[in-house]
Every structure is written in structure tokens, then in C-alpha cells.
Image (cartoon, rainbow, N blue to C red; front, side, top):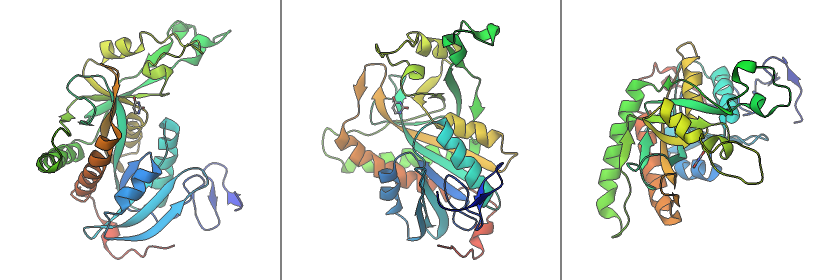
Length: 307
Ligand code: URA
């Protein structure tokens, strides 16, 4: 970091770039598709009519802003985990005027036979599973929870209207693509209406066994399912997005979808050739959904995108 920053509470440089995602006002659109993977972001960006702005930050964030079907959109790759989601949502909020619509396109583990690898989950809400580090601590400070290794939260709802658009657009996109695929390649179904769980880690909080560590996590998935029986997906970002949208005082609306990569019921994994087929179809369906969202569109009126 070479720039001089001001304001320790919410650091920005002299030009107004925020600290971690390294963008300023005029560089992020009100409609945002967010992914984890930079390659996925760049592949989806090929679908844009044009690209007006692109920046890769030193902290691992990529922002590509342009137009899709004439509408300003940003595609932002944020890496993984709740913490990166927090940087992304707060810092984007700080540099965008007006309401923001965000759709997350991620990958997940599936907890249901209804969503095998190659299917797409569109959750209506999400919750978090957090490793309770006080459980592992020699002198815990929170006696009330010191015997509970993993804490399961309540739910945060996705935006209903956006989720409805996303589900319908996704179903149509997958149905239209299927007849053109090679024999034996199946994508879908779209599994909607259930819940997503964000683990605070890919490993312990998602119930993966690691003999190298003391995790006490053999029951974590059953505990989560007992509290939330309609859980379909397990990943690390989307519930946090819903939570932050709920706390945004009505200015951020959010929906999400995930390709099922890991089959946590039968212990399988998606084949790379299926990812290569599915990813562009889902990416396009998310862009098609984003531009249908009815946002008060201050961005339409001639924003000049700055490099
Ligand atoms: N992402 C996750 O967080 N978990 C999975 O099992 C697959 C993708």
C-alpha cells in the first residue's frame, strides 16, 4: 500500500478509494454480480456489451464494471469467507450512490439428494455455523456456551423479489441449454426455497474431518440440520451477504445461487467438464436476473465511468 490514507474508522485515500477493494465513487455500478474466483469473474465479464473499468486490488479483490444489455453492472471477485464478504459489501456501499442489488454466484456443498453435483441451489434465506473458539480455550470467558463447539445462528432472508427473478431465470436458462448438451451430460435441477448455511471455515465448521486437528465437529452438520431441516447448501459467503443486506438500513438487496460442487450426502465432487458447461450458463442467467431488478436507477442517467 503506497497511498496515504485518512480516517482510521473507514480508511480512504485522497481520491476516495476505499482501503481493501480499492475503488472510488463512479467505479462500481448499482447492480453487482459477485463471485469468489477471479477466473470466473473474467469469464462472465466476456458477456458484457463493453467494459468501462477494471481494477485488481492488492487485497485480492477484482472489480470489472461495464454494461450488460445497456445496463450498468459490476462483476466483483472477492475470494472466500464471511470476512471478504464484509469488506466487499461495506466498501461497495461506501462508494455507490443509491440502492444496490447484489447477486452472489458461488459454489457449495449439497446436503440434499435433491441437489446432486451439477445442480444449482437458489436459497430463500441463510444462517451461519461458527466455530466457538471459547470451547477450545483453556480459560473460557463465556460459561454459557463453553460446552458448545459450534454455534448455529438463526436465519437471514434473501430479497424475495430478486430471488423469485433469479429462480425463474435460472430454470429457463438450464432448461434451454439441456437439449444442446452432449448425451450423458446433465445440468440442473434448480433447487429453490431452502436454506444456505455459511460455515466460518471450509473444514471444521462444515463438518469435514481432519485428523491433524482437534475439532470436535462430527455432529456439526446434524446439529445444524436439527435446527434448520430445510438446509440445502453449505458454503462460506451467501448467508453473510443476506445478513449484511438486512443490516444495511434498506439500501442493499441481495439474492444468491450456488453451483453444487461437493456432494456431502454421497461424498462426490463435480467433474471439471460439467463446471465448464454450467458456469457460463449460470453466469449469464445471473446477469439476466440482475438487469431485471427494479432499482431506482440513478446510474442510468449518464454516469461517467472513471479509470
Ligand atoms: N464451497 C464450500 O464452502 N464448501 C463446499 O463444500 C464446496 C464449495
